[in-house]
Image (cartoon, rainbow, N blue to C red; front, side, top):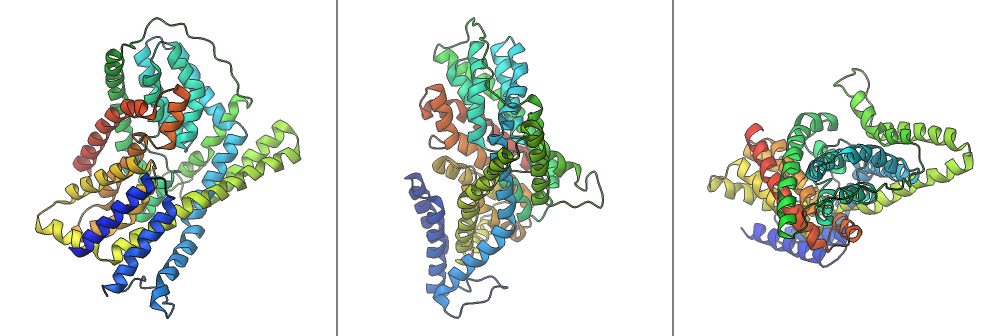
Length: 453
C-alpha cells in the first residue's frame, strides 16, 4: 500500500498548497512530476504511454510526456475550450449576456410571493447557464438585475445571495468544459452525454435544490429575524444598451450543436469549434448591421481572441497540469492497489463512486474551483470502472456535479466572493445559505445515479 499512501500524501499536499493560494497549475505539475519520479526511483514500471517515444534519457521522459499532453490537448479539447471561452467573452463585450439576463428576469417582477419568487429565480438562474457558462460572470450579472428584484419583494439579502451563488452549482449544458471532458473520457458524443445521462438527473436535482432553497432560506430568515415584510418593488434602471434580440446570440452554439447532432439530422457532423466559428460569423454580421462601423466590429473581434488567450493560460494549462498529476497517480500504481483493496473488502462500484464524489466535493470546497478537482480525477475513472466491471458514466456523474456544488460551497471561490461583495455580506454568510440546499442536492443526485444507472 506504499503507492496509495504516497499518492494520498501528495494529494493532501496539493490541496493544502492550493488552499494557501499557490498557483494550481504549477502545484499539479510538480505533484505529477514527484509521483513520476517516485515511480522511476522505485522501478515500478514505464512512465510513458505505449505510443510515446522515449527521449533516451530516462530522467527527461516526464517532460516528453508533458510535451505530448500539451500537443494533444491544446489541439483538440483545448481548442474547443478556447473557442467557447472566446465566444463567451465576445458575448459579454457586445452586451448579449446582459440582454439574456434582462429579458429572462423581467417576468420575475410580476411575482407577488417572495418565496415563490425565490424558487423561480433559482430555476431561471440555473437555466441561464445554457447561455452564460461562467459562474462568476453570471452571478455578477444577476446581482445587478435579479438581486434588486428579490430585495424589492422583501427577501433578505442573504436569501437572494444564496440563490444567485448556487445558480451554476448543478451543470447540464453541452458546451461546458466539464461536459466536454467527461464525454471524451467515456468516448461519447457530448450532446448525447448531456441529453441521455447528465441532463435528466441534473434537472431533477435542480428542482429538489430549488425546493430545499425555499425551506432553508425561510428557516434562516426566521432565525435571523429577516422574514419578508411588505416591500415596494422599485423600478430598476435598465442599463443594458444591447437590444433584446441580442439575448438569442449566446444561445446559438447550443442550438446549433443540438440541432445538427445525429439525434435530429443524419449526415451532418459539425465540430464544436466549427460551430463556434459559424456563430461568431453570425454575431459579427449582426453587430455590423447594428453599428454600421466595420472598424468598431474589428476592434470587438479582439475580445474573442483575448478570450481564447485567457482560456489557454487558465483552463487549457490546468487541463494539462491535471493530466500530468493524474498520470503520476496512475504510473505509481495507486489505482491498481486501490482497486485490489476494494475488491478484497467487497466494496461495490457504487460505493467507489460515492467515495470519489465526496473527495471531489471536499477538494472543490478547498480549492474554490469547479474544474480543477474534477479534471484531476476524471481520467482515472474509465480505468477504474473497467477493472471493476462498472459503468464509467455512473461513476463520473456524481463527481462532475460534486465539483460544481463544492465551488458554490467554498468561501474562497470567485462566485461566492463576488456575490458576497455585491450583497455586502461575508463569504461565510453566503456559504451558510448555499451549503444545506446543495448538500441535499448532492445526496439526491448521488442516489438517483445509484438507482437508475
